Image 1 (cartoon, one colour):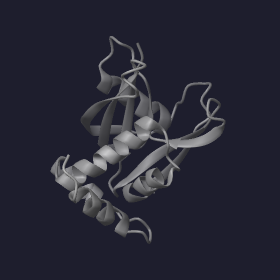
Image 2: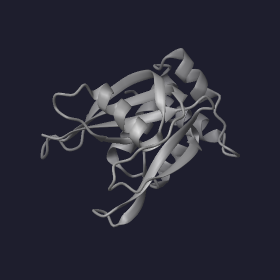
Image 3: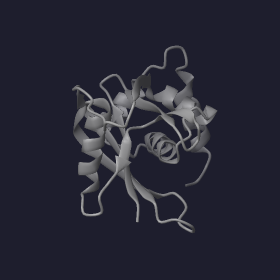
Image 4: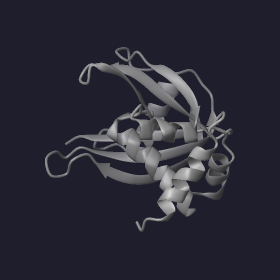
Length: 173
């Protein structure tokens, strides 16, 4: 069995921090949300806290478990618990010795654009970012998190969040 966690940190300006690294399996550099493995006897939120701290240095006051995503339930048993974290305090990242990570802080709307353009292609990252966007459009997030995301500015591309909400509004989920 495999089990993982993915977490989208949202700072006080509505930005998120992505982590990038070269992935040998796909033979390219990727941008992803922080995440990693979780022991079967470990609480997913504890694994998410540890991965967020290791990869970004952040600690978060608020955690929301969004959903449990399965990669391909017909062929493998891998699944990922997906979280949003906010009320961040900065710290010093302390990645695993074999990890060579870069960080990139972007407005949340830009992260959504990166998903839609294919720049972010990790299944768990795509799933959790679009999941947050859908929940934002539906008003299904805690009020303080919705305020952070709605007040975020995307440096010249402020229409991204509006356009996605408009598109999502026409579908029944």
